[in-house]
Amino acid sequence: MATQSPKTVTTQEVAIRFHELAQQEEWFEIQEEFFADNVKSIEPSGSPYFGNAAGKTDVGKKTRSL
Image (tube, rainbow, N blue to C red; front, top):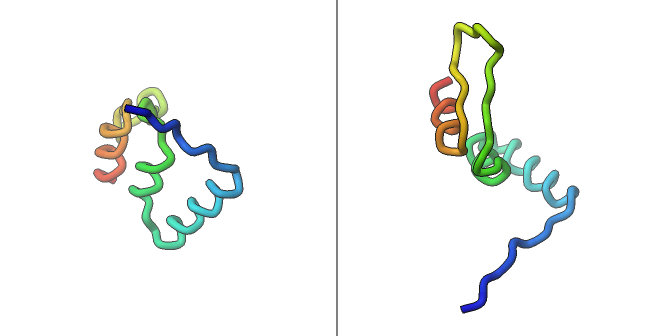
């Protein structure tokens, strides 16, 4: 069984796709498509708002709670 390597995209292609999604206010889709699996959301030390989150799932949950 052959495996396919990910398609290489240009910066221009990423920008076009990002703009397309942003114009539709598809913020969660932007996160899903562009964030790495090991993304981190780090808050300032002593922040009274949200804690840190690591990983695409937890960062997504944090963002949805805003």
